[in-house]
Length: 366
Image (tube, rainbow, N blue to C red; front, top):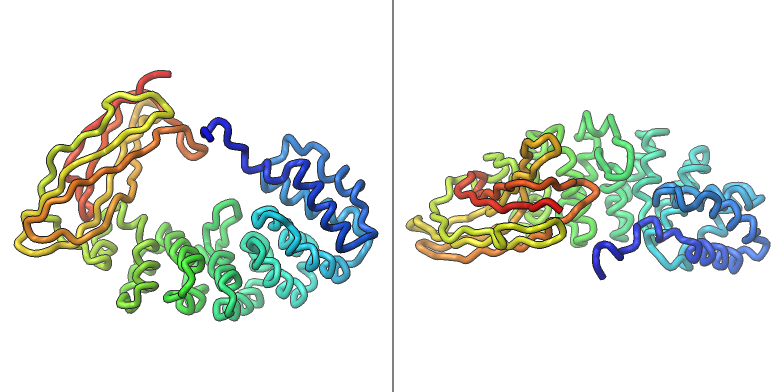
């Protein structure tokens, strides 16, 4: 399937999915007003974004269910395992955040339950705003839970810069507020959880890089799970060539290498096509060395200047005098986060944070 034919994310909440929700809700609550729900949920649907559509589902349920919060939750508990999409099930914790702020204990139990079907990462943040200390205490307990989804919620829900959500200003200003959660999860056996911990820490590096560096320097990276988190948590600092981050990764020393046969092919492309970056890397060191290999593309901006974007390429140990061929293909296509403009794009090879070689390709006019 081409990118052009890929459905928009908001189509997860299309008419068929809303009908599915209505059918399954009727199965667990026979008195459910399915027609009223669908009328409310589909009104102006085409103009709504994915998150607006998700919110509309919980609003529509609330509009047609003539029960109190506790009674409604019982039916939503029964509904949760019947929803045929984890992402779509986000409307369940959204309901809790919208109508359960005044019933703290019941709502915490509901979010813990619903997160196992999708994620309650957006919903929990409303409780952090409403009653931070009480909510954080529960999340600290969740970080020790046997269920990986619950443990992940402790980390993901407290991220200072969670995408698609508002920032947690107090956590952004004082990352130590969530230090116990991060400490409990720093060697988690679940990759799902480790990704969240790494992303949480990467968020913090945007505001408090030295705090993250000091924290990770105190970790035992002989543990493979901890080492994985550290590597991914420091990715932004490594891309910036931060010497302290590179040293933690064992790549703080200047790389003793030569680069030859560097090329980008084809030399000229149109938007939507792919380039292939390739080069040979040869060690000139008398001993093995740890290398962090990245590359950067200087993208042309609308005003004609360029802005560099660094991409991870490879981290490995290169033996004394050893030689390795490096290849990386990249699709040059329009993204929601990046608009492309024609012109000469410089490409740079970075080894252990240092720019060692450059080449270029031409992005042609449409």
